[in-house]
Amino acid sequence: MAYKLTIHDAALVELEETLSWYNKISPELSEEIGKKIREAVYTIWSNPLQNPKTVGGFRKLNLERFPYKLVYKVSPDEILIVAIAHHKRRPHYWKRR
Image (cartoon, rainbow, N blue to C red; front, top):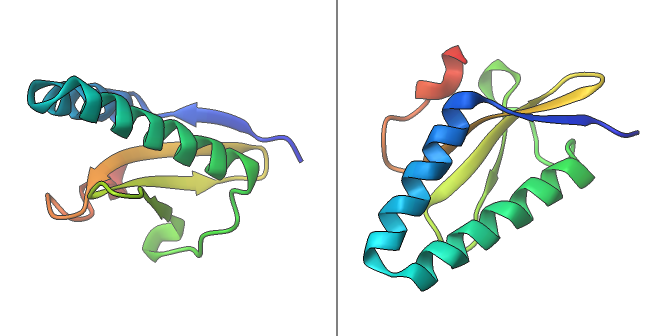
């Protein structure tokens, strides 16, 4: 089944902030986390049901090497990525999205 993939506006802001923060440390690190995020988005789109549901019906996919996860919900025809969340900052803030 082909799902429509949507990224919440707040998740796009988190993406920009994350890339900017890593770019200040090292442009190479910024490129690497950008690559890991693209890979995670593709993995979610390819097989959105592979990760178990958590509280509230959210699913998450942890990035390799970086302390971030992509949080998403799956409906019958859409995947909504609601957050690109750091593992240690503001837990579960994205539940209201």
